[in-house]
Length: 181
Image 1 (tube, rainbow, N blue to C red):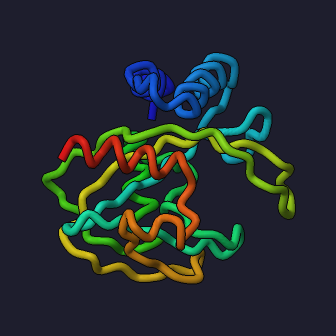
Image 2 (image 1 turned 90 degrees about the vertical axis):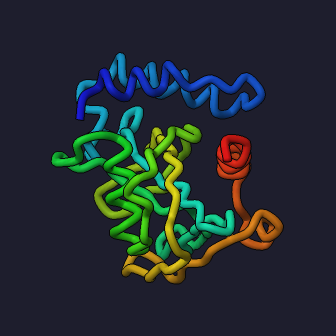
């Protein structure tokens, strides 16, 4: 994966109605310009790139994982690996590893949002930031399997966002993708 790919993706993202995503875009672009290893999970200052999947099922519901470590409902996603061909492929790999979701192979992933957020410290890792790229994927079914990283998986409708504590960045990414359908 190349830094230029992420720079181009981030630079092309534009939603003036979403101030938080635009601020995250600025932070991602600055981190890419000033950081020698933006994909390394060992780069803690200012953090590193991560990739997440906003998986939308055939009925419009979103796939969530109850993250075991963070103890909250999140989109599946995580760190970039050396053999990931692109940011979208990193997100796809993470979705498959965490949920075994059946993604539509004919649907092209779309950058649905960006979010820079803090990650609490754990053994060997200080507090750091994930500079997260959120890619939308279409699923051909609502089959999903829980992985070891999660306590549960669930398909969540927009009317259930409050029940699952879906954060505003995910709600806005979802709304952007619903407009495209």
